[in-house]
Length: 552
Image (cartoon, rainbow, N blue to C red; front, side, top):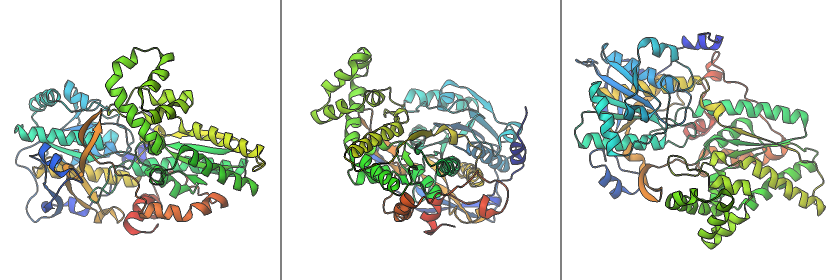
């Protein structure tokens, strides 16, 4: 198979990792932990894995290794994120160091592979082909939810057959929620199988004090920012288009905010601020139109607008509508699907409460239909299918046309729309993600060696040189709360949203007026893999501001 020049060079890259992991380690236990909320309910649901201490690895003078080899299984779950292959490489190298006869098995196409007994052994020849590469194609991924006793028992059959004593689930908040449930079940029945999670999602919404960032966020944002910078260069050259750019990130605006910090667009909407200010769709349209008009008055009939994918769900009135739609479709799904498409809109209008019914009836036909499409595996509206960028571009144009008739605006307004999502999910990982992911995988192998279950691999202090990173583990139950899913209250990992009092948003808020009117575009260019560390190894601006309060 032909390889690109970059693939060949990246195959020889040796990821940097915490110094402590290079020698013999021992576990240092912290204080007992508790869930972020709903403590009594979470403790009751997870009696065997709740309240465990946080862990950190430290140097040990004792020998490191296992008397017997261990067999480990690994699952890639959910959407792809750059660096997943390096997590697997880190697990492989870690268990081989513990005992050279240890073996790693990958379950094919996600959790479904565990249930359906579809797997392959990952040997050194296979692993070496995928080091430092993007994608999840080494074993594929899937969105099957592990949530029933039948699934757990079916999975246990193949784990026992392969003599697998530990399973690593690499995924986002929902996938690691599944890992937590699985760990609890196997502990309750003394199955003899440990379950460890790894934090994956480009959305950046799986993080806390112990999990600084989810892997893939850094690479995806740098990939999107390169293209946004290219568009802004064209925008500033042609000087005749407003670009409305929607960015992946269904539940939080971390990607949009990070890309704004990197590229300095004229406008970036932050969903969490929209919700906090109780803004309506009309408020958002007015805000954008006002900036367009002011720039036009200065002779600038061009600009860029960054839009988070999940914006619609954060507009309070829309959020209420979607919540009722989610419950409604969960309750009447079969009945709804039997109704003719031409009659579905009026059927829904007749079933919603008065306020939501009026709002739904006021939406354009295309948006209304997109809100009632099949839900994702977690029961949520598929916001990626809602063309928010086109909706906003069209509504801003209509508002400006109104102002033109009223002689409040006399500019030109032409738009181009974009959605950046899949372009960043399988990009070749940045040096940061290559290093971070390898360290997460290696840490997972050490957690297995320490006999832990129900933990998520944690690597912290990542704005410092990699040698100074802190490796350990955090109980997954520590991140959990109760939320409504499919009309029922379920234990899930709490999503980390953009904090409006956090350093990244404050930096953005302090500069956005300047960026709106002065055309202060930054052009990041492509990800750099070779060269000075000051260019190649930089973490995200979000991390820099959160950890150091300043940008390098």
